[in-house]
Figure 1 (cartoon, helix red, strand yellow):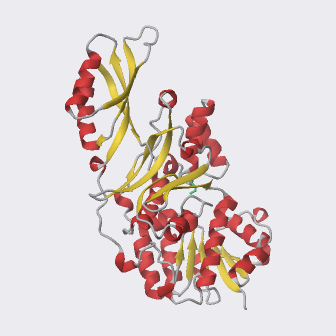
Figure 2 (cartoon, rainbow, N blue to C red; figure 1 turned 90 degrees about the vertical axis):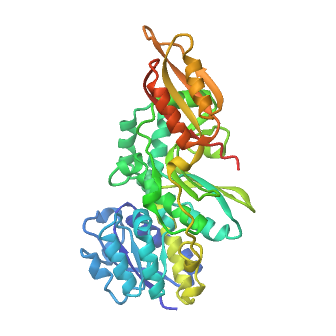
Figure 3 (cartoon, rainbow, N blue to C red; figure 1 turned 180 degrees about the horizontal axis):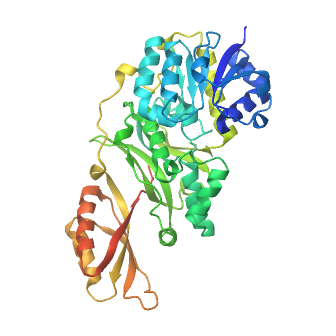
Length: 437
Ligand code: HSE
């Protein structure tokens, strides 16, 4: 059979890694795909030829729009990243009848509905495994491996940079900025690292996971997004003393009222396997009604781990070239006309437990006032610790863990607590999940 001709857009970290893996494992990949896969043209504005051995043997265009017009190419790999011109390039490739493989989670989370509709109309596939959790085949697992199940919830560490920062803060007491700079130097961080630290990158990935888990359209704008920049060293320590770890989780849960899609720092019991996923590693815990809990772990970023997912998609697309479009795996796991209009819940409608840290005056009756407010709001306290005051301090840190409650009720209670004369400053609140199925 003739080789499949592929165009590669982007020769950065993942583009270079993809080129390398395709060269290195060409024979194995061809044996799996049933045909040889050849990158015959690439497009990149700037790249380092020395980091992509063999690239000199193919034509590298400056203009990616010229690449998607090349009639010789059957598949386009988009590894440019960002919203634009990636969106225009992918839509043009689809219009020209080409299949697309992308690692661009931002593109899929924001423009996936439009892109998949265009792809369906043209009978082509858009594959995006590499967009979520790097090398972990989580899209394939949820979309195909768990197809028998009603997915009840999933929770993932889906940003390696953020996990690296939290792990180093806990293990080595390192400074936030210092760890972030290292993640950038290692090529893990996004071009704009606030995407990692403020949870936007994780929200892109969670939006995609939520859609394939529950069969709902992609709704990035409704995904609640909170970063890790407010987490202090003392919270990491207090959580540890109470038997918890703080992880930056993406959580998608189906409830009777709708779907929760939320990214925020979360206390989870340290005995859970996922609580022990450290450094840049990612992990996703998925609870299906038939299978129970399943856990997927691996490298969530980096050149070759991400290339592993890109090439796996490429192999899938090559195998599907001869199949009828209606017999292929649907982009969002469910048939396009079977997507549900289940609402995505606002954060105030989410039910979760909480870690609270207050700075309270060290005198009689203060605890009773705080407990009274929580009690009136129907919030039950699970554990409490009062810390020693620092030298010359009149206020002490008060740590509380609560049982689950509607976030709206907790917001009202926190407002009342902050208004107490005996409480200094804002109440620090971190949501808490047991992840016990
Ligand atoms: N910046 C991302 C991360 C890269 O740190 O996980 C992979 O999407």
